[in-house]
Amino acid sequence: MGNSCTAILIALTVLVMVPGLTAGGTTLNPLLLQQTPGTWTRLPRSGAVHPERIARHAGGVIDPATSILYFFGSDTHGDEWNNEVWSYDPVSMTWARSYPEDAPAAYRYLDGRKTTTTGRPWAMHSFAMNAWDAARGRLVMGARQMHYGLENLPDVKVPPGAAPESWWEYHPAGLAWTPVPRGPDLGLGHICYVPSLGRVIGFSGENVPVTLYDPGKRTFEAFLGFRGRSPPGTRSVPITTAGGTGSS
Image (cartoon, rainbow, N blue to C red; front, side, top):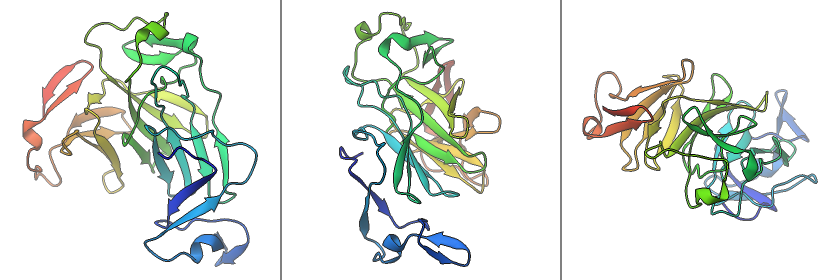
């Protein structure tokens, strides 16, 4: 993500709304209505609350029902501990922070996951490991601890062989995180939500679809393709979870 949050760049891929112009009962954004298709528009920032920046190693998703964008992720090079969720509302062109970031003293390793005493994920890289569950209105996120030593976290004891990735769901309405058990290690892959399936597909770092996440059950399974057809290379890629390795 870009360093500056004095403005945000948004592609006109959805109908974004702001007060001022209406059509058929829907409030539209005149700034984007004037935009040439396939181009970018820099939106001004309104309001006093905004992040200093969105970390380069963060990831973002958009809620298509509201056009609100959600961002989570940190550079986590030992100097940043920003594990809060930031959202940007194109309706008012304002930012909102979910909660203050947790201090390093709150970090723990409990029940096989990297969490805090407040029940949130660590400040970690998320990159493209973010998807929006449109059916349930939640952010699905897989984060990866990178680039800072545990010497900065005296109350954390991570056993050898612990899973590098930590999977969570975030519910904006309740400002609450829910851990997802036994998530796969995608090796800095990416995920996307498929509305027709009601599932999240996880891709490995080699861009191969290898896992399917059911948000309703909060379970992962091997991805074997659409309608029984397995994508090339899928079956040869193993899925590593916190509980072991299974072949896809």
